[in-house]
Amino acid sequence: MDSCDLLIVGGGPAGSACASKAVRGGLDTVILDRSVFPRHKVCGGWITPAVLKELQIDARDYAAGRTLQPLTGFRTGCIDSPGVETRYGKTISYGIRRCEFDDYLLRRSGARLRLGASLTSLERSADAWIVNGEIRARMIVGAGGHFCPVARFLGADARKEIAVIAQEAEFEMEVRERAACAIREDVPELYFCRDMRGYGWCFRKGDYLNIGLGRLDARGLPKHVSDFVEFLKSTKRIGFDLPSPMQGHAYLLLRDMRSRIVDDGVLLAGDAAGVSYSQSGEGIRPAIESGLIAADVLLKAGGNYGAANLGHYATRLRERFGNPRGDLATEVGRRMPVNLLSAISRRLMASRWFSRHVVLDRWFLHLDVPALELVDRAGARSRASAA
Figure 1 (tube, helix red, strand yellow):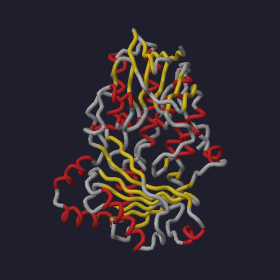
Figure 2 (cartoon, helix red, strand yellow):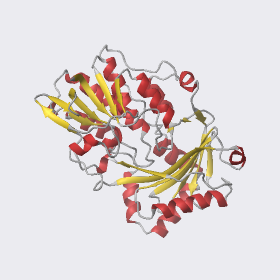
Figure 3 (tube, helix red, strand yellow):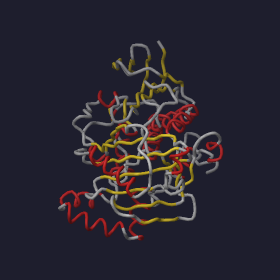
Figure 4 (tube, one colour):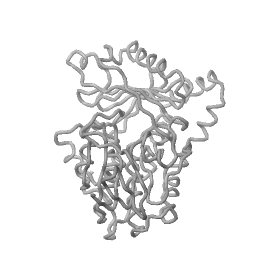
């Protein structure tokens, strides 16, 4: 039987970030994932410079042979409105393709990989776990997303959780489609629904285009998606039909989580822990930060992985992600008549100040939240070598 200190279920950004820090701290770490990487991942796909800093990634190194589209501005507005363009005059974010990004993080994590293998059984044996009857692990981290099997073990029922539901498509444009696409590579476009309970996006990354829409209220999602695509066509943002059907995905919000995220010898990270930002739904940065925090907690535990010794992990997540600014506005919006909310939101979204300083700086880019810095075992702070 194989054995390890730490088994991480899920090879996405949360799992890879956790593994990378755990391996540097001396933990024998295995990542288990049912997919074989590189794999397709439904995601809008953008990261901020804070992500590169937290993961110590040199942007020039990553861009060699991969998509790293510098973003210098955004167009924002309401669906059925022209929107306003905000220019920053510098790179404030990057467009990436998840099939490349996730594979890159996984391979550089230093963990032992068991890919193409699902979690089929999880049994407690003394102070360790027996996984699939063949791996003995002292600690388990569930980083398998919204439907994480480790989360189910802790009592999660994805069917009963409040989740953000999205549909999107990413495809490589042909010559005719590139000519009929008005979306600029360095200026993604974001358009909010009338009730402000969701938004659609258009991200162009070189020859690739990602179009999607997500909502906190899943009722009528296909209709919202269809209307959004028609809006893009009628305003000549795109001059073609989508070449492939949209795919769906979902994620939880920490403030709506009902299941435990920590127990004896086990904790959750990333979407499994519901750490996505509530206003934008952006999940890559919080997933990575939750993975780094998880590894930090495990390294400081000194091999004592009891729930009492790991409990402050949940506290640290809530301090970092659980009380996002703007939630009060969201709750007020839920109770306001749609017509009134629509009128107010249209006026706000037409304001260049509101679009930049609230929608973009706070809700999407989180410019007021500094990159996470953790002291590793050697006592040196983790910093980017270049960004």
